[in-house]
Length: 178
Image (cartoon, rainbow, N blue to C red; front, side):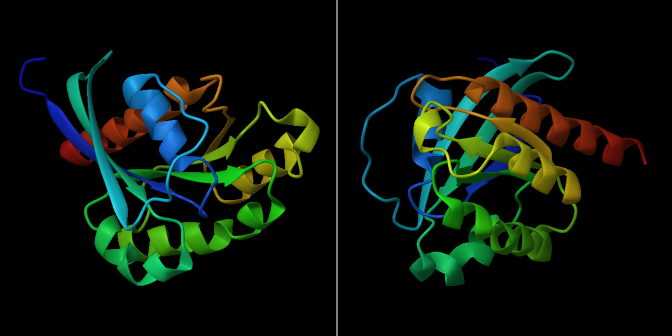
């Protein structure tokens, strides 16, 4: 790809084991593994792409470790982020209850930037503990976009990332005009 017109930094936020690493590898490499080691600190990935009305875009993706022990580093990792995917596991109610903490840390560090709520592991319908309606309501209450995904099947993964990236680019170009 030629020199990108835009470089965007987006973060993946959420509790440990909600599928952040699986989602980013599905998006970047279109691959899925049944198990990953826990992300220690942060994992950095990049994907170059063409986005319809913006041309070449380089997405710098920061996959933040969800363990409590990395909480003190969160602010540092969020510096310069243009937006974030906030992810919960549809089979884990605790990961849903912790969303306020993740959204709060992002907003405290970055202010109002595009956020996209993801309910991951939609392929495990029989184990679902958080309904799609609950996710949709949370997103609406917090002025976020929302989508249910499955890193395993790939369902909605690319669409979620691309929608967030387009929202970020819309925000950047709006700022450029003002």
